[in-house]
Image 1 (tube, rainbow, N blue to C red):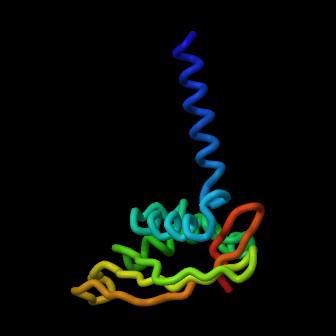
Image 2 (cartoon, rainbow, N blue to C red):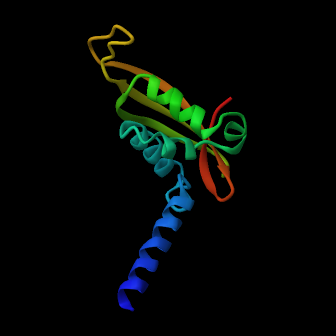
Length: 131
């Protein structure tokens, strides 16, 4: 009986973790950026997708996003250079991304770029805002 209860407890915990996706309710925008970029470095693009805000998800399916990301350059590392909140519902980050060498892109060395990421509070958590 104990083993059945343990199995159900583990399954319930897994469902809660999956349902939480990339919400950052207690970690704020910094935690969201870490989940977003760390999942991209691990090439866990389904988790990366969960970090986007609803209007993006309404236009781009998870399957299309994952397929596109698997065809693109692999993110090797990231460094959050700055993070500035604008009130309680918006933030902007400057991030340095380093992409792996790519035969497909005829790049034999890693390449680093600096990007800006907009973040927005949505449904109690922070999300990456695009467009």
